[in-house]
Image 1 (cartoon, rainbow, N blue to C red):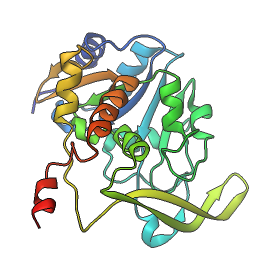
Image 2 (tube, rainbow, N blue to C red):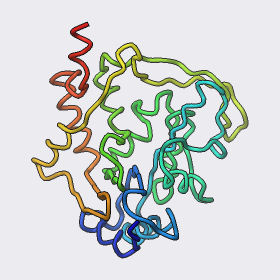
Image 3 (spheres, rainbow, N blue to C red):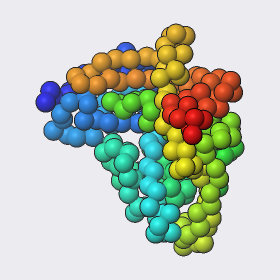
Image 4 (cartoon, rainbow, N blue to C red):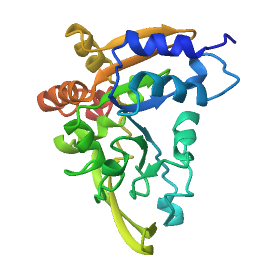
Length: 256
């Protein structure tokens, strides 16, 4: 496997338009970018060098075990399936994390307190950390991850009230700054009878056509950036024209 260096990562970040002071929502699959003896730390160092002390890093730290365990401690519950970089950031002493027990984010940097203090029933509600990132003009940064990993997609799905999802409540115990509390959170979950298979390929093509999708190859994968507002606007465009437009198996459901 090819080695990846700090200089390579910094070069890619600058190539895709990351600059000092940026707020970044980062999805990662570092295994596609090469091997590093310093693991996730080399990426953190490179990102911090580019965005500086005025920048902000946000990672998804989702974990859906709350549906069975009904227990969530933001300081101890690990992220699951979000990649080693997300879990690395979550465990940093300076990291802060939101209280949503299934769709949390962890953050370090300038706006981390602002973002992680937001406690909404759905992670994508008005006033949520995800909406606040749009207001703060954050960028999406994909480190080896496919565009399908972008959690901001769910923000648009919720706003469009897509027919292949429905609301479901999840009660349980959540550890807050005041101690353990009985809480109920909600998610706009997939309809398992439909089992929608989603694609973002039309969204990416749309963004590329407007020169809003910036790509730098790195070893086996890519570093990609885009303004979050542009990504959401593109997804909104497709879902507004047809809420099924990004479900590739919809024709199978119609034919049944």
